[in-house]
Length: 258
Ligand SMILES: [Fe+2]
Ligand SMILES: [Fe+2]
Image (tube, rainbow, N blue to C red):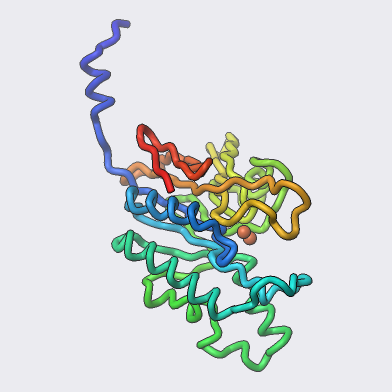
């Protein structure tokens, strides 16, 4: 068959509308990496995605049940205010984006603390997680998980050694395509079954990856984000990881730096 160069060029030039869902998570304020977060915001502003999934933006170190390092600053209000500032910046950069925060294990530290240490205060509206982070004001919905076009977003609860293994575990657990954080690694894990073609996306982190308190040696983590780009009016999607390496994102022919 002859190659029709004109037809090929026409196909390359064709631009279709896409619905992009970007995941920006594992920020762990105040243990976030400011440059990585800055870069993530620049990328989100460039993309103007239809949806941004947020998860684990605050560390809640002070509420952890694990032994705490007394030298670490224990200023809960400052951490909450700082997280709100970051969320406000992102909201201002993507004013028309649907923003959804999915519940994470670090968020749950607040509820666990209240239920075990201050049970009587547990149902106070002002102490609920969405209230503290002013999610309503910022037009951010708080959910356990989110499904769009047969694709699931959640924070995740499985941690396995090596990139891809957590994604495999989540796909096997959920039996559908999806995306999670929690492992702080990046990967795409594909599985073809009689029931269809599935993928699970592991989404990286935006926290500091050096000198992690509870890891001996190098943390096998990678900063970055992930996105799923859907064909409009279709279930067809393109999943991608967006690694941040040396404070750069290489995307198509563009380079984003911080
Ligand atoms: Fe995390
Ligand atoms: Fe987590």
